[in-house]
Length: 274
Image (cartoon, rainbow, N blue to C red):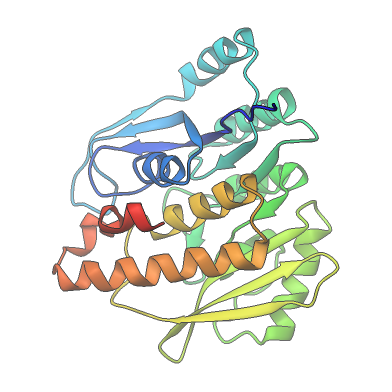
């Protein structure tokens, strides 16, 4: 009788002790989807940067030695998920991680966290953003927002972009590596739209009603579900629908609780249902 082993996803991202984002989100979400989450911290935050003050410890100088130990253990991963990377050096480390651990059976998801609403985040420079492009060749699935898709393709940001325009962005991105792309969180008439591109298939747009303001960690919930579903063999369109519906439900509960915006989304309420 055959015996299947539990799958593992390596998640490269920062860790915030409070505020529900990054690794603090990915670990429980991926675990709830019955996959072992193996974190690689890029930085340690007391709380995320949306608060007025925070403590941060940059983990860059320790990352290579941390990863070396995993190589000694001959670890292998069904998936690799990358999130926020704070420097060109970290992007180079992730590049080496892919070279060491990505096999033909490893599904890689790159969430190119760089900016929003047409602008780079304050910690990101155009040079750093250009280095992010080097990770596309390793990615099977890419989950940018519209700003990030525009930056990666060197296309002028257009908040009112048409579906044909979104398709062109995805075709340009796909030429660099990823064959599955979802451009997430496009705001249209009170809804949030996710544009799904999959090589060889017709593109699809799915919408959920926007609930309340944008909150930290929403993108991390989204990319974590996408990565776990991919490793579990879930169809890509179905996975995007899964992530979108879950986030919409969680946001409604978060509003019901009157949770401060900085505290992220109350996903714990529905972990058993994910």
